[in-house]
Amino acid sequence: MSAAPTGRCPGAYLTNSSPKGAGLNRMCTRWLRLRRVGLAVDDGVVSFRMGIDLGGTKIEGVVLGASDEVVVRRRVPTDAVRGYDHIVATVAELAEALRDDAPGCSRVGVGTPGAVSVRSGFIKNSNTQCLNGRDLATDLRRAIGCDLVLENDANCFALAEVRLGAARDHEVVFGVILGTGVGGGLVLSGHAHAGRQRIAGEWGHHRIDPDGPDCYCGQRGCVEAYLSGPAFERSYEALAGETLPASAIVERARENDSHAREALDTYLDRFGWALANVINILDPDAVVLGGGMSNIDELYSSGRDRVERYIFSDELVTPILRNQLGDSAGVLGAALLGVGN
Image (cartoon, rainbow, N blue to C red; front, side):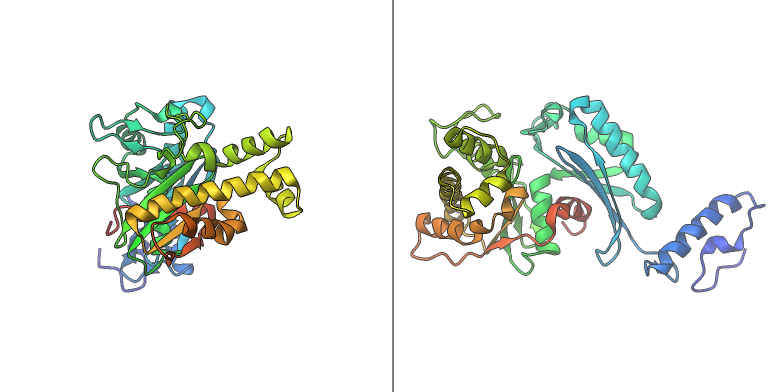
């Protein structure tokens, strides 16, 4: 068989009657579809990267093209209550569904809550607690059938915002997750930094009040016990005697409801304490906020003022940035794992 001329799929020179024809015909169909959206090149197909973000409520997968453009994105429920084996199977099924859009991809990046223990190789510190003590990396490699890179989800968030989002052109970036939990990720010169014990950036379990509320980690008074969305809602409930979602509490605060104002003011003050501690230690070039609670506008005004009040400096020049990539930052960062990282 002669070589295919430039601009044509190599499989175009085999018919369905040849031994390999049927499979290559499917390859050509895929190649033509990718070429129509500008993702095929004359001598084959560009390199693709696949990422999967294992969240507490959803598992999201994405395929990126050579210029970091999104080729395809899919989401499925996590259903963590169904247990560890269900989660592993769901991730494997999602990876399989993405394969046709990621020809040549031999490595998958996976973002997960928690981290891999250096001592045991098992997951530790995950608020999706059925993952703790399990060899997630090995089980996913076996289920997916290819190599993978496993990284903390907050590090994936920070990496994506540095490479593609709000924190581009900054060398030292601290990424903050304020959501159902509180996490943090550290990026140095464009590379996620996990640390020797793989706990770099874990400000959510920095204790700011040893007599504070219990945290799932077994400590008391952790940042997460004050700055997570559920913690904010509990603080309002203790004042007002009713349960409301965080967004409704913020709206009530803006309408001068006294209980909501007090809950929000306390939240912003604790945000200031906690983030000032991080800035005192790292003195980063930028801080970028993510997670559902990062949508509170007051974090970037009154919250910033509290940080400035508490840092060990006569001024705050560190920009506190709103994320640009939304709730897809984690999966985009996962796809970037292992690419110059």
